[in-house]
Length: 513
Image (cartoon, rainbow, N blue to C red):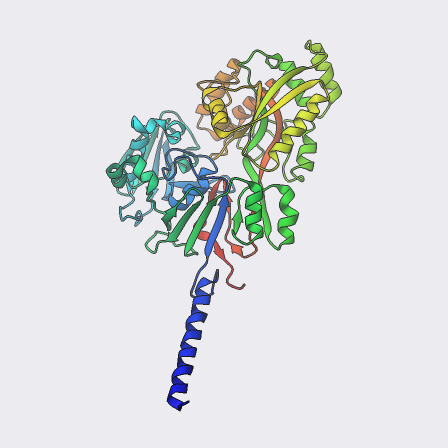
C-alpha cells in the first residue's frame, strides 16, 4: 500500500473515531464544562387544565406549572412568603398592599412582564369566563389591582388578610396579549411563561422543556422532562432503572430500597393533615357528637404513624398540621381507648355498633390505603362495620364540589397551602362551603372574627379557639399530619420542595460522576 494511501486511511480512522467519541459524549447524561444534563422528574399526573395555570392551584398540578409559570411569590419551607416576580411588598393599610415588581422580566414570546400584566391577569379571573377557574374563587377577596407605574401595583382586598403575599403564590402570570389573541383553549395547548424553560413537546405522558437563554434567571440544566406516572410503584421503578432523577410522592416503606441503591429519600412535613371526615348531611348515628368522639377513641392512630409512616409524621391532635399558623400545642390527641369507645357508643344507643360506608380516592399515596384499612379494622373491634369504597377522581370531585357523597364518611385532608394558615382549611370544612358536609353554626361568628383580623397575635389566639371547638365537635376521625417522601437520584443536586413549589431551574446532575 502506498504511504499516501495509508496516511489517508489512518486520517479517516482518526476522524471517524473522534466523531464517534464526540457523539458518545453528547449522549452521556452529563459532561462537565460542555454538555449539561437532562433532568427527568416523575409526578402523579398532569393538570386537567393542561397548560392553563389559572384553573388549578393544588398538587400535583403545581409540579407542572412551576416549570412554565411564575407567581409574584412562593412560600418557603420556613412558611414565609418569598420574592419571585415581586421583589418586595408592604401593607399600606389592612386592605391595601403595595407590590414592587422585578425589572427586565419577559415571557418566552418576548412580551414584557409588568404591572399591566398583573392587573390584566387578575382581569381574566374576574371575568365571566374566569369565574370557573379555581384561582378566581381562591382570590375572590381581592377587590382590585391598581397600576401605579410599570413596576408597582397596589392590591386592594375586600377584608384584611395578613397572608395575602402567601395567597398570591397561587396566581401564575400569563402574557395577556397572547392570551387575548389565541384564547384560553389554545393557550392551554401552547403555554407561554416567564420561567427559564420553554415547552418543546407535551403528550399525555411526557412534557419536554428546553432552557431559554433570555430568562430572568438561568437554569442549571439544558433540558427538563416531566413524566406523568400515576402509580407510585412505577415511579419507584423508574428511579430504580435510572430513567428518572426525581420520583415524587413515594411511600416511607420504600426508603430502605431507595437508600440501598445509593439514592436518597427527602422526607418533610406536608401542609395538611388527614381525616376520615363525616358527612353530616346524611341521617346517620354520626350526627351525635358522642358517637363521633367515640370513633376517635376507637382508632389506633399511633399504629398508623409508627407502622405505615415509620414514625416520620405525627398523630393529629387537631384539624390542622403542626406546621400551621395558629396550631395549638396544648391540644392533646384523642387517646386510643376502645373500651371507652364501646361505652360511649352504648350510652348513645348503639351497644352493638352500626354500619356505614366510607369513600376514599383510589389514586393516592402508597400508605393511604393501608392507613384506611387500619381504621376499618379498629372500628370493627367496637362494632362499627365500615364498607370502604375506592372511588375514581371524577366521583370524588363530585363529593368535594357538589356534596354528592355516596357514603357517611370519606377520606380527605385539611390543607393549608400555600399560606400555612390553619383557617384556610375552614373555607372547605365549615358552613362557608356552598354545599357543606359539616356545618357548625355556633362556630361561625368566632371563625368570622378570626378570619378578618389583621393583627397576627389576635388571629393566633382566635384561631386556637376555633381549633379547640372543632376538635371537640369531632367532624371526622383525626388521623395524622401528612408527610411527603420524594426519592432523589444519587446524582441529582439542588432539589427542594417549597410547599409544593419545586425550583426546577436549581436542579442539575453532579458532573463528578
